[in-house]
Image (cartoon, rainbow, N blue to C red; front, side, top):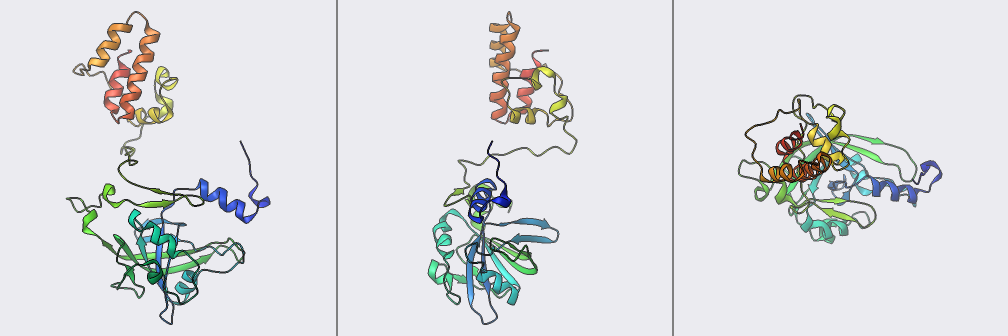
Length: 294
């Protein structure tokens, strides 16, 4: 294990290791305006949702490490405390990256990156028309984290109104995660795309307490086949299930038939089959397979 003392490392090294490790990060594509009316559009990956009552997002323009200068976005919100956060999707990512160039103050990145300005309803900065979700925000506070190069400036923004493209909504009016194709920032030049090929669900802990991995039967908890993730699925029940006499599974029948004279091999095969069921999200079925040992 490589251990790094950040206080003894260069700014570039700290940036590299942290941005590669703390990832993926959502992207705040922020449009702002200064008191003279100059518009700026710039992306920030130090960004996330921190509250929904009140609805608050935070992003952080970092002071440049090489010369300790500040970003136009930060300067703008200190003059006009409003911002539109335009959510970035895969079809926007190349233009978004172009907008991150350090153009001179007064240059409109909407024009440079080929995006269309769209008037907001409550704030002065314009929205990116091509974005499928826009958040009009009021800046409540700007909190500097330092005055040296590499120091962040937390822009705490309250979301006043959301605009959502109806093409990404499901039949019940909710956002369909499979239609949005979000992108996220990694380290260096790396990004990732969120689509159906890499989306998966993890069942939230139920409203009652899960029994926990420590409460699983020893034969399951100490399995050499079941992964930690598998054990987490099994332990997210509030009580160990009972054997269901109506459970009918041909694979289970075959395992019991072929390995009944060798309990150790049968346990191994049952654990292999249970792992397959758990990886397919079939927790109830996996429990029934494992209970067959009793």
